[in-house]
Image (cartoon, rainbow, N blue to C red):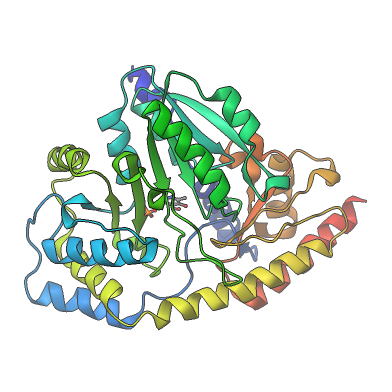
Length: 388
Ligand code: PLP
């Protein structure tokens, strides 16, 4: 019998749908993939070359568990400048992907029974990490009429003496919403009054549209000492399989996370860190090009969805997801997503793959070409037409 701490774990919905889509493809079906949140661009050449050169230079060794100094220094400089804060390289932890920066800080901070607030609909790893770390998950609904930020009244009602940590994600998966500064200030005040922690997942911070920026709660005076910033290379530089991410946190916490890394993964792959160094310090126009391509796709998805009767899609301000409201179709979204895959050949996710408050919504990842997106929208429109 496995332990209670793992018995609550569930698979990520995206992998489940991908597996079924691939099975249908093996049977000859033509499927359009809008389920996985993974950039479809190649890792930029200069970054891959830096990784290859590092392997050839024998940078294939054990290295410090918190990451190589050059990369920590570059992250401190770059992430600090982008957020308007000063970061010491000793506050930076490099990890194999951003996901360990969800798990390890929770393991380091939570005592059994501590409550953790997190966005719902939200990235499924949040709840899993809270469960495994022995915390009590407290989902806070994101509401469409607030551009998918929290309902602060509900936040207030659920904030309790037991709240130890608040997870934020802006720009957000799956909604594409950006939390406004006023909401961050409100939450920051609560966190400071009660001395609780914030884990701010900013993995999509560079993927923003309409000339907007996503403010970081860490930039609010007094918040650095209680904020863990999570960010990384997967989305910004199209490097998902390289497994490279980082956390920025007070040094005393970073020292403990370093120990957890030492005794679990040992260290992050050596050569990938040199690729990461090149990613941050080299020409950033590759990022701008990818973001402007996403923006074109976003416009096409939002326009196309809003043209389908019964579907209403708010304009996402960041990340690469559309989160249309399909409640007028009067079908549970799990069933709708299944039927879209089986009957229309479009793989997408039900909002409920991100928590119960995702009912009434679908998530479409627009990490696919404009042509494929246009075809998916055509199939979606036909499918809805057949329903009525
Ligand atoms: N946070 C959010 C909101 C994500 O969507 C993802 C990946 O999908 C991650 C964190 C994890 O990033 P990584 O692949 O670098 O571990």
